[in-house]
Image (cartoon, rainbow, N blue to C red; front, side):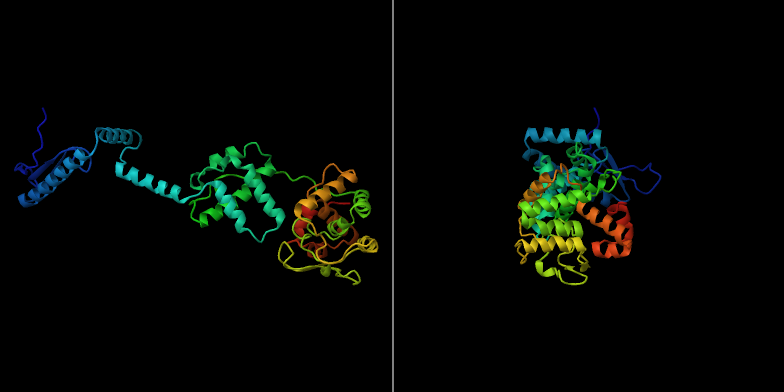
Length: 369
């Protein structure tokens, strides 16, 4: 049988260095978890260490007596797993790491709550943008009950795996913004969307409306839904953004009698928060004149509808004109393409349309007519 360590200092005079006093340490009391021999220069130092170890042994015995057999067995199983799966990691270090994760999870909120708080914080955005945030949250409903701190890139990737590339990119953009809000709120530490790659999309050719289609839309509105006429005129003939800007334009922003600068897009209305002026063409003025002649109201907002009512009116108008699909940004594409074909001034168009540069205009909003 192996000799039991007595914790009594023993002198080894045969040692060549001056540390001849030795204390043998039990594995249960050793910092390494294995039996040790500790050497000291003097007997006094060895005796002090032996007393310290005796105290630890007594405390260890008390600790064991306070633990149930089940807990002792569980601790032993944990040590075996650490030795196998994470050699060198102590049980205390593993526990500390878990408690950090547990604290983060406890301080976090479900993804559904994060979406609600984020959307509520975006009180100044347009109704259309707010609706897109709601739709993104709904499309990611499979993640709603997961704690934000537990959300991983793999979970997100699985949730969007069936989305078309353009939809995938849009949802990821909205989710990234929401999770950044969650980081600032202390609900998670890192944004898992940053680990994902957005889909590469080959941009399709810019789509525009044929003049006959624009006329059909306006004639239907003139006959069947007069209140929709100003919206269509400013979308097709002034390039005002249908989502966001057109809902905020007032009739006081329009001067039909001016020689130029008929429409003012205030900074509070403009997407880029820069004031701009738009010249209306003769046909735009003629359509608005006919609207006025038929008794159309010209006070307050030019689009006095809720977002849902506007969608319903536009859907009915498109169906009446024989449209089965409305190209994305089709009205602005049509305005930009036709305006440039008529005036040939790309810089003037950039200013009136409220874009950043001529490059963006050429790449995204213009088509040869």
